[in-house]
Amino acid sequence: MNKIHDAYLTFKGIYKYQSFLKKSRFFSEEELLMLQSKWLRNLLVHAQKNIPWYSSIFREVGLNIYSSNPLDELKKLPILSKKDVQNNHGSFCVPGAADRSVKFLTSGTTGEPMTAYTSFNQWELEQGLIWRQWKDAGYKFRDRMGIFRSYAPEENQPHIKLDRLRNWSYFSVFDMSDADIHRYAEYLNKWKPSFLRGYPSALNLVAEHALRFGWQLPSLRAAFTASEVVPDSLRSNLLAAFNIELFDHYGQAEITSMFHECKKHDGMHVNWEYGLVELLPTDEKGIYKIIATNLHNFSMPLLRYDTGDLAVGFWRNCDCGRSSLKITSIRGRQDDYLLMSDGSKTSLVNLYTYFSDISDIKRFQLIQDRPGELIVMVDFSEFLSEDKLEEVRLALVNNLKAKTKLLIKCPKSPKFIQSSQGKFSAFVQRGKSVI
Ligand SMILES: [Zn+2]
Image (tube, rainbow, N blue to C red; front, side):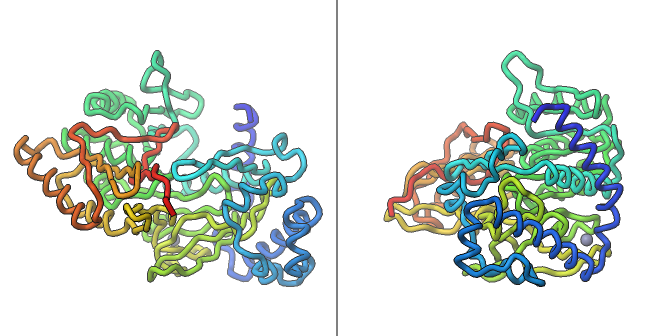
């Protein structure tokens, strides 16, 4: 998609917000069920006619596309895994999908990337919904926004890039040393942004820097994050450093569902206009698999798709007046696990909790290259003396050894891994399971 087409769809998305999405967030449960049923029926009819995978599976499970209750009918389908889609990719796409869609690649940190196609009408809706969250936070077109994501400058390019049309400044998240952030802070102080947007890991480095060196940005009104799990410390750091709240957003490259945080900052609302979401229980209490069906993607419909992500907490209402339900938060991927030397797998949850309780750590990343071993990259607080730092590092290694029964390595000069877009994951699994 070229820039002009992208801008055109964004503009149409804003129109969709003005004409529909602004009101639809307050629709009654009855109204939203009626609309979801109508959209789903259209999609099922289309899928049966034009998408080979569904033509055969609808017949197999006896799914009636003209049923008066398509929402129930949908449940006849088995859960769709990423593997199913990868192994049968062509049969999920409408003919000529590549020419009539926006194309995405799912991230491949723990597996093979997958191409996902999204029809233009769905992309408009996506833009409209993002716009709606920004409007909730008080954003107006051309308000200044400092963006800490997506910008990966070449060697001869500057670390800061200004988009004059939108009034957005992009900062390289590959260059986040203290000296780099000093330069960013000088720029931001002069430029006076109203909003920050970025990966949680990058915004946390900016907020911590501001707290350590005592600089402020009184022009700021809110921050927007997406793409990574939000660490607990980010909200308190943003509040302490800049006196602003965070609005988190969740979506996936497969475009099956989207969640947004509202002004109450107490959980994530599902965007009911976008997709249907089912929460399926896991072995862990209060943790659910997010199974989603986009309602408008005619290029590559994924019905009852297992997103691989986990929800914390079951559906509940919000007192902000929206009709859509919310969950507490989104947690990392369900396939995040440690591989033991005997090939068995262990959950990472306890380790995240352990790290969140240590105050001398600015940033950490766990990397597993082979079963039985774990590399722990840690940026320690610079307020630690050299002796104290060694003591903390040793205690960390010993504690983790006892907790995980793995061989722990904690290099003195940590090398953090980021995706090609600069995204930072707290855990990177590069080892192969031996079972
Ligand atoms: Zn709410």
